[in-house]
Length: 353
Image (cartoon, rainbow, N blue to C red; front, side, top):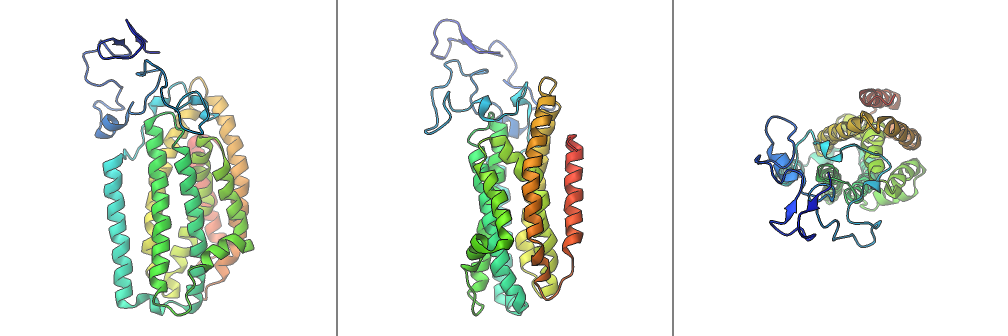
């Protein structure tokens, strides 16, 4: 319902009549459960909406934005009969986000510091050292690209609930990028011949990584914020992200005398579980929207085809990495099958198979 003013159009105190203005209830929104959670109290309707509690319409606009006010429904091709219905399953907001990030950072820094003190990195297999410099060093650039895409996406989300989920997702990606950068730099100080620039060079020039670059940069270039969110968590992460993080670095490390890399990387897998749950809930709402469900389903299948083809190409191009370490505890085909099953489960849950 559009807000109206009984006497003036300024929205001044005492002059407005809006949805719920005569209600004796405390909440100005409908909680998901019987009572509003702390997350809902600090998130719901914090971002203004001219159709709810913004009588004077938009009075701000982003410089270089798309016009028509700060937040527009047309920033995505998806449509909803109620954008305000979404609630992130992880219920994360500013305080809880910083608390979780702080705990993870403390763990990662303790792992690195204790490992360096014990000299654990000095017994890494020599070939594995090169693998880390080249390929973990390259992967951090993929994480950074995904993080900046999500940072851009959160600028355009229509509600604070959507933007909170997108921005925390971006923050997790940026934290992992920084964790990898610091980890490689710190162990590199103690290892002869270590080259901090090798990861960037590999990302930019090695043919193995160019399809991954293409997939990430295509996501970065998308102008639809929901397409970016969908492409990252529904498509790229199960087909490429988990494939390289869990399917390679975390499985191959210990077999090559590396017991430091897995705990540094492992937090990212927990991050993804939270981000995936948030994304699935939002996409599920849109796919099952009574008014726009069929239209959204067709849209999402188009995004799936577009980004799925790029992610498959990226994953297959990375296959030679599995053969590079001295010790090869798992094959590419094994982890590839796991990633395909993972994607199938996600799509089945969304009704997009």
